[in-house]
Length: 115
Image 1 (tube, rainbow, N blue to C red):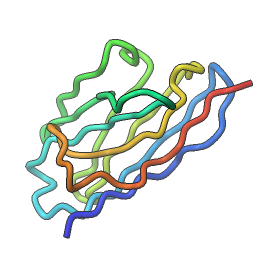
Image 2: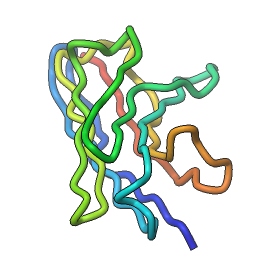
Image 3: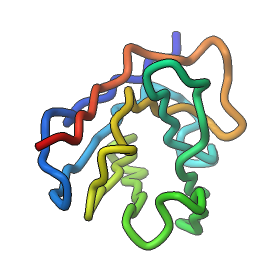
């Protein structure tokens, strides 16, 4: 059974940084494109970033230049380094495959950017 567990969220001031981590129990992780998504209060879930098995990445325009996605195929983990955080980055952050599978959504981790 696939399980994705996100961690690392918290409260941070505008301009601050956080590093999110996702532990994925996917047997084919090494050949799976992985992504991060987020859902802000009152809004639909949206794409944030994805990374291919080889390490190529792509980002939503709203986070480009501030967020960096990485993966460790030996540990089955996907990280999201978030810098220069803004209040509009406040959301619950989820990892999933790309495209996402409805069966894989986990609890997510809450990121709150506020002074």
